[in-house]
Amino acid sequence: MRFHLCILALVMALTGCSSGKPPKPVTHTTAFAAGDYRAVYWLDSQQGQVIGLAERAWQGDYGQYRSEYAWRAGSLRALKREGKKRVDNRLVPFSMHVRFDANGEPVFQRYHQGDALLPLDSATLSRLYQEANHIERQAQAQLANNVSVLQAQRQGEHWVDCDGERQRWALPETMTPSLVQRINHPGTFVIAGGSPSIGRDQIDFLVHVEGEKRCLQRPRLLDE
Image (cartoon, rainbow, N blue to C red; front, side, top):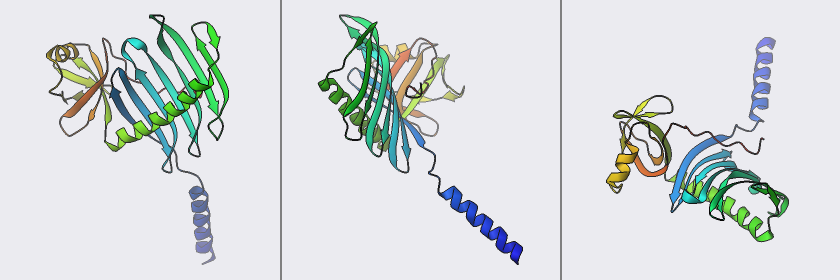
């Protein structure tokens, strides 16, 4: 009897220890498109609260970048971004790192454009803070709409995803014949937003089209 009581006490103790640990963060991926802006988001949440977001964004002729954001207790605390942007009619590399306090006030900033280290003014810092929170709400809305990220390469008559599996895609009727011909060209790699379904995935919008296969990797800039 004493043996069984000891086992029961041990199980209850172990259960209590494990329940005291917060659950691991959950990551969901979605996509968005508006005008020249196209993006893929990785949204991290823990116990129903957003704690992080990573972003790959393309802006047509205006450049592209990757970002990572971190929240703590519902407040944005850090962002880091790097990529290329159009300056004086040419694309130049840039990088930024900004940290905020619990009230949203910037407490650290570093911005490089080309070879120059430049200051970010208060208006830009405020815009970056608001933009990050807007992107988080945007990603949440896309997830609520069940928008998924679909990516595959055209190989012969088939689409082959990043796991080497054949996929069937239904393209939107609004897509022009020239664009359909372009993405159906063998070797073309396409990243799209859409709705997965049994047998055939519905493509709702294109995010990025490349001439070679480059499967997306989640940006991890704040760990660097």
